[in-house]
Length: 83
Image 1 (cartoon, helix red, strand yellow):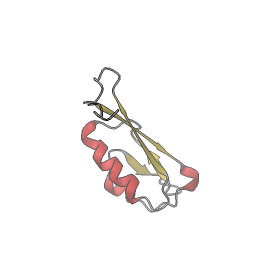
Image 2: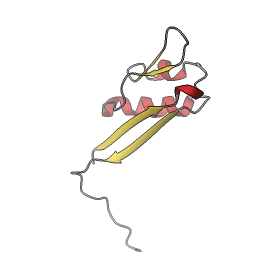
Image 3: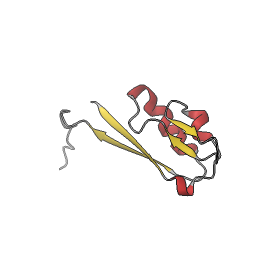
Image 4: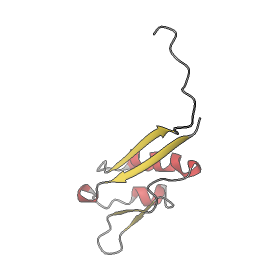
């Protein structure tokens, strides 16, 4: 089931620790002037999504938001038989 991953950042809260750029350099970078996070890819490819999720979890300031959404053309998942 294809899942689209979208990344957003809050640079105003970033402390410049750099864990994101170290963990997922294809998705994140750091500004040369202030060291704050830069988003290189708001919709990373599926093979880079896991690293982006890990970077979000490692961010000490929690400025990275990862949103996952099932692709519109995907069939719905199995339903809970209790519903």
